[in-house]
Length: 330
Picture 1: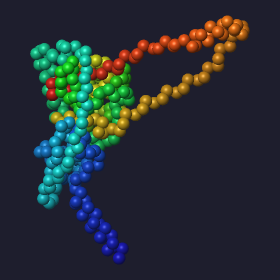
Picture 2 (picture 1 turned 90 degrees about the vertical axis):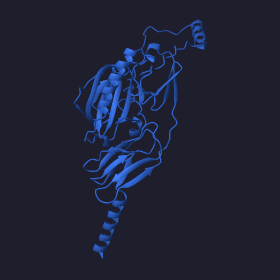
Picture 3 (picture 1 turned 90 degrees about the horizontal axis):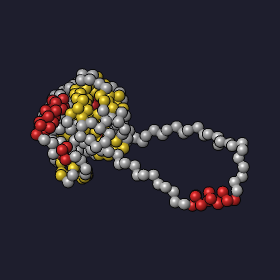
Picture 4 (picture 1 turned 60 degrees about the horizontal axis):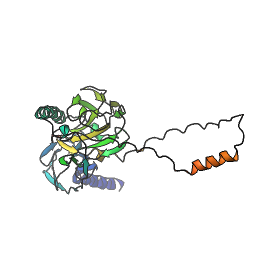
């Protein structure tokens, strides 16, 4: 009886695996999202006609662009059996409109020579993102590359000096120049450029299967092309190079040529670690101190009741990116 029961359970398990040959383990069908899943080893997949690499053990990653339409069409070609077509409703997003004034007009409207340079540099970035490496670092739990104030979000429409421009495809994190930037996951460095016209210091790390991270406006890059990097390894330092209005990190992600939202792979921005409290200092004792006179006490009371001088307002944290960047800029 026990062997019969086990046999039935095994048969039901096989049916379940057959019915769920393709599973999504992380991510949702939403514009800008990165989704990770598994399929029966040997399965071929296509997302909206684009081939999807499946690892030998069945893992894969896919990305939905900022304006991905609905439904998404995922075709499955199992090693045995008939092909299947799966349709998934894609949740549409409302994106922020962000207005930035005071950007130098020469950066909003670059001259022909600057545009030619920018297009050459964009071609380098495209070539780096076209790679379809078999590595599976994408399956790791991603982390924020640094902890700071988020000043720009993915997908927002930016209007520079009243002129609408391309959407912002990254997440901006304000932090002082020189702040270490850590690898959000392991990977291999596929592009290092010290000074691109729009994005300044630019670094691309490939996590495998077409998923890559781009870090821009860097003041210093600590790795070189071809280097293997590990998750949480320092790879660069925050800066304000290229077309930026202040020091910050602009972290972007791509699935091949599709711009995806890095925050779909990480949780909320962690809170900064609290600084240890300073050791209490004993009050200074003046051995010659005497009681104040009544007149002095009255003067002190008058000063305490006077309005306190306020600090000057802090300067706004500079943030910005490549004003008027072409759609194929980094």
